[in-house]
Image (cartoon, rainbow, N blue to C red; front, top):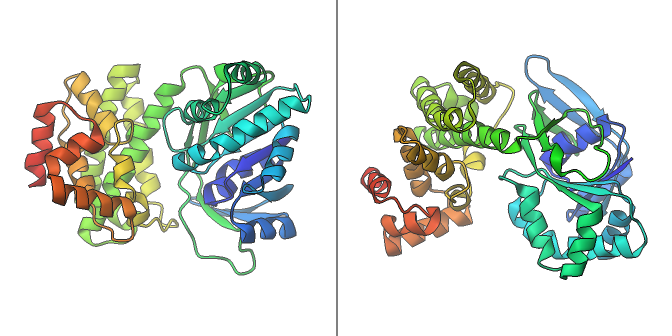
Length: 379
C-alpha cells in the first residue's frame, strides 16, 4: 500500500508519517521545503525520539519525498496512491484545494477507479470536510459526482504534542514527540475497504472525540501558555509546575468538560481522569514546548469553532459556569507577540475600534451579557 502525505514538518514526520510506516505503508511526503525533500530522498529514513516514562528512539523508513509546488509530480503521485493524509494547517488546505481538484480529476481521467481516501489530520473540527468543500469549489457538478463515487473524505481527530527540538546534526530529520498519541477517524466516511493502520482508531461518533480533544487538550494548552507567558516562563512544563496556573488550567478544562458531559453523556469520573492525564502530559519534563508557540495566532484561536469560543458557547447553551473560559478569551485578546502577525493585527484592531468591536468581529459572540463580562475583565 502507498500513501501520499502532505506536510513533512514535525507532526507529519513524528506522528502521521510514522504511524503509516509502522503499518508497512510506503510513504511519499509532499512539502515545499526543498532542503527537507532532498534530505528525505537522500537518507530515506529518520529517527523519532519518543520521550516520557519509557523514552526510546525509533526509526522511520520506506520513505521518499516530492515538492508539492511541482504540479506534475503531485498529479502523478495522486494518480498512483492508495491513501492521502495531510498535516499542513487549516490555511494551507485552502491553498492546496485547486491543486487537489486538478489531481483528483486527472486520477479519474487516467482510468484509476480504485477507491481513494483522504484524511486531513489537522487541528480543527471536521478538517477533511472543510478541505472537501474547498476542493469542490474548483469542480463542476459532474466532476463532483465522479469524485464522490471513488474518493472518501474522512474526518479525524489527532492528538500528540510535537514541539520543536534542537536539530540533531547526525540526523537533521529527527523529531521529538511525547509517548501519548491519538488518531481517531470517522469510519462511516471511508470509501471501499478501511486501511489497517496501527494507532488509527475508528468511531461512528467522531464529533464527541473531536470536541473532547479541542475542549480539553487545546483549551488547557492555550490557557497554560497565556498564564505561563504572563508569569514570565518560557516552557509549558514550567508553567504547569506553578500551582496557581495548574489549578486555573484544570478549572478551565473542568468548565469545558461540563459541556462535554452534558452534550455527549461522558462519564464524569472518566472525563476527570482524562483531564488529569492531560495535565501530566503538559508537565512532561522531556518536552520543551514554548509558550509563544502554543499561544500564537490568537485570531484563529478566538474564532467561533475553536478552543475558547466553542466551549464558551456550550456553557451558554447549557447554562453552565464559564468564569475561567472568559478569562481565557481576555488573555487571548491581550496576547502580545511582535513576531506573530495575528497578535499584531488583533492589537491594532483593538486600538482603533475598541475591545467590544474586536470581540464581535473575531469571535462572533452575540450574547451581550458574556460580551460585557469579557469587556469588564479586559479593562
